[in-house]
Structures are given as structure tokens and as C-alpha cells.
Image (cartoon, rainbow over all chains, first blue to last red; front, side, top):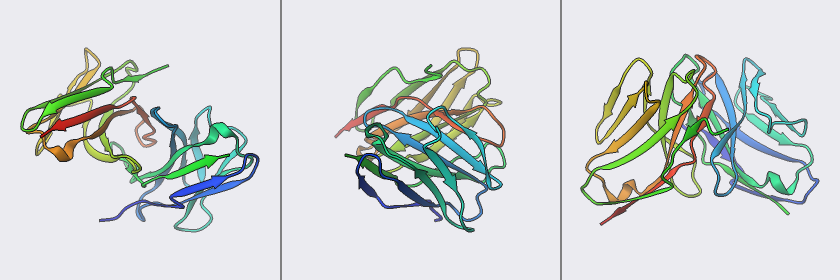
Length: 114
Length: 113
């Protein structure tokens, strides 16, 4: 069964450092997403990406965040200068994008900023 | 602004009985609703969905009911099994094609053997 894969599973970084979280979405999917879940809170939408550009982003997704699809398979989330409050589980997801279809999520990357 | 609410943070149910998880929403533009199951340190796993043109969708032990006038949906699991113990998230989508999901806060379901 196809799945969304994320690497690394856990990333520890010092405040102010740049991190790149990586995702390989399901191959025939067209929409890609990043969500995050701060410990004990709900899963929050960060950004959606379609046709090689951002289609929507939340207020959380400020100038410190960027996404890229550098090749035909990877989808990355970069945080330029991490803050303590960026510590969370980050989930990548993808959908076929043809309307009313479920999103498939990766297993997540736990980001810890110290 | 909590557009999707799950008012019960936790629920305990005896094995074999019915588990009913509830979800309310405020945004009348939502037209697609999903339930996800999540284990610790894993990503959400899709369970079942329903579009706003239906009021019920069934898949094995899982049934989702939608009451549009009340802006309420529920997930029924019957019979409940120990492997159903997890956090269940209700999610909703408002835009055809974009499908950004708005999640509720989750309900931790514990099935008691």
C-alpha cells in the first residue's frame, strides 16, 4: 500500500538554526500539505502546495517557513531560524486532489528546538 | 477560533460495546468531513469520511452520521475492540480541490477489556 514517508523521525536543533524536514508524498498525488501538532494540542494546517506553488498558507506559516518540491518526489519544509515554539510534530500529507478525497499522512517528524 | 470542536477529551468504553464519538462544527462552508485515528508518535490514519450530501456512511464496524442542520457529526464504532484505543480526530474541509483540513482537538478513546 502506498504511503507518505518522512525523514528524519526526530530532529533536535539549536534555536536559530535552520532545519529542513523531508517528505516523499504518494507518487500519483497532486496536492501536498504540511501540518503540525504542538504537544497536547490539535493538528494545525500550515501550508498546501499544488502545481509547484503554494495554494494556501496559514498565519503560522510566516517568512521563516518555506516549502519546496526540488524534484519529482521530495517535498520539503524549511524553517530558516528555529524558535523554541517551533517544537512540535510536523506531518506531511498528500491527496489525489480530485475533490472529496482523504489526505494520507506521514508518520511525522518530531522537531525539538533547544 | 475553533471551527471544529470535539467536546469530550476522553471516553472509556467496554470491549464489545458501542463507542460514540461526537464532533461539532461552526463553518457552514464545510462540505466534507473525515475521521482520523492517531496512535502516539504516528501520523493520523484515515478511517472514514462523509460528504455533505449524505447523512450516513458505513464501513465495517465504523459508521459516520452527519446532521447538517445541527452542524454535528458522530462516529460509531461497534463492536469496540482493544485495538481501537487511540486518539480520534474529526476533520473538515471547505474547498473542493484544495482540501485543507481543519481538525478538532481529538478524543482519546480507551477500550476496556
